[in-house]
Length: 214
Image (cartoon, rainbow, N blue to C red; front, side, top):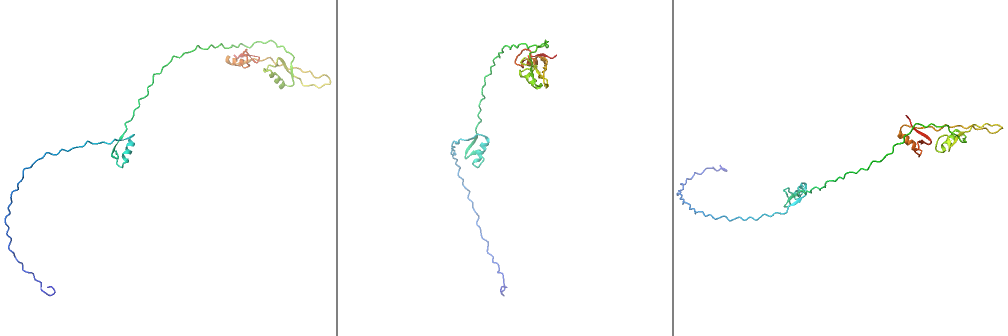
C-alpha cells in the first residue's frame, strides 16, 4: 500500500520484433601508388669556435667547470691544454787542459851542525860591579841581555854585610858567578832555533855555546 492504496504491477506489453534488411557491401577500389624521388637533404658545413687554451690539466678543469657544466667546454668553446714547450739543453764546449809547468826546486842550505861543547880556558876578570844584594846582582847580570854573571863584561859581585867599626869601612868580598853554561837542545832543528833566538846565528845562545844533547 501507498498511504492506504494498494500497490500493483502493470501487465507487460509485447511488441513484434523489428525486421532487418540484409546489408550489402561494395568492394573498395584502390588507386595504383605513385612514387616520387626523395628531396635531397642539404647539410651546412659545421663551424668551430677557437678553443680556450689552458696551461695545465688543473687549469683546464677549472675552465670547464666555470660555466656550471663539466662538458669539456667553456661557454660553448672547447677547452684545450697547451702543449709543453721544449727548450734544448745548452751546448758546452769540451774543456781544454794546458800541461802544468814546474819550476826547479828551491835549494836549501845544509843545516848548521853543532859540535860538542867547547873547552873554555880560565876567564880573566875586570873590576867587578858590586850589588847590594843577590836580587840586585841578578838584575845587573840580566841588564845587558845575557845572564852570564857579568854586566857588559864586568863581573857582578854581591857586597858583604856591613861591619860597623871605628876604623875604615868594611871590605866587600866579590861573589863570583860561574862561567856561562852550555845551552843544550834535543835535536839539530831545536839547536838551530836556539842559536837564532838571540838574533845571531853564531853557534851560541846569548854567549852560551849551543850543543845537541846525545
